[in-house]
Image: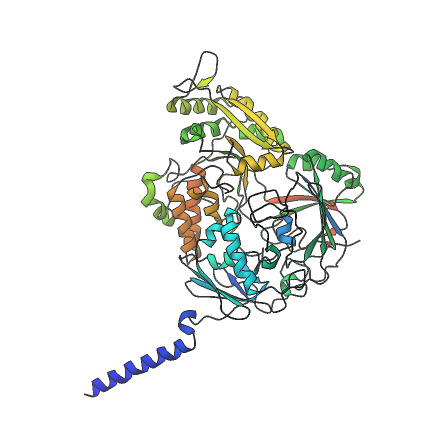
Length: 609
């Protein structure tokens, strides 16, 4: 009898405890607390009492002008859609997200428009509380209504890069005067951070306008600058907003130091360099190491008016090179792509154009711990790949290495290998020296390049001569930036120059790069038309990983699939950026791990006589 009574009171106590917890709203919230920041793994490096980002100088003076020169043009001021060519700077100077990124950590966010972030241990929901003082440049407060509208409009009518995250949202609701909660329909530990990086737009500014149409309306955002003047295709002038609501935040101390930031547009990359030499603008990035050593001896450098700065970084190499459009029948067989990679005489090209100095990109995440390791897959990487081994191309499990030439222009050994691979697929050289398939169709490649891209044009010209030895005709098509965007958006090319940067915390954006959804969706970053289910499984494993070692294993497995897919002919990378700039421009001594990347120039630079 006593045991029955004890059991009754125990059950009653448990019931009352559940009722009490539920009444406090703690069951749904999982005993979580609002926080000043969030990290992909572990805790943010900066505590709630941090005073500034580690690579920003809180004592940097305000004032001066930063002037840039770019090859290209623009015809839109709406950077959120596929249509038109809008300057990238609008996103970072005029608009802001809920959370800001510290580029001295792999992936950590701190409150910007949002005062706090709160999420569950499973990260199946997230809640943001807006800062009461947050304002758009027209003086209107940033509201929960603006947040909800921004998520929906970007997810439904914005650029395809926003749709992956939008499709993972189950609901988004207002939970308080300044708080908004987002519930997710998938297990994805990165998704609360992605939500924190969504730009917030003023809903009222888009009333009566079609969001997905190109526009030259002056943008209204909450960021530190306003677009004060522009001429379509020629220049833009951004002016620091003296009433910027967030200028005293710890996250912004030592940032946004220039009174004006000006972007001038030129028709050709060579013209841009000559304009810089003539003193027409403030700063110039040089991507060619040979030119850096030989061409920067003009008077302004010699007399000290222009300074050469080298900025090291610890980020992954990413991928740069010529991409194959596998939507085209001629590139569907991996052996054809492998043959064309063998014909690409990297060692000779690197020596001719760069003096042999920069290292080659050997994988999509080389230069970091995320990059695939040489040799056969082992351990957790092997365990992830094993269930798909029958679907994987040669080289994924065994290990893949790019072909190496002897540096001689003829590249005979690799040309022979290329011929063998092409013959296996049915491509043979006729009596006139032309490579043809069994139907008599000649092998011809249209390589698409944008006007002003002198480096890629020089590489392509050497490659053209190599392909002639195989009986392949390479047609190099150089078009202006408007046509180039239009054709690449529609995947209207055989090959094109391709570049994708990678972070130390890759995640949802990998779907945009490699998922099959991008095969027929215009404007995705899957230029190669990749349809590889094992790759998508590796991305899912990355997003579900709770421990860093599991995450690293998933990235390395994905890296193996990508490089062995032979989708891109990689060229070189550099672990140092080369910036020539006027002597009055300064940057902090402590550099972020990402180096010269997003959030560095002009963000933490300053002008000082």
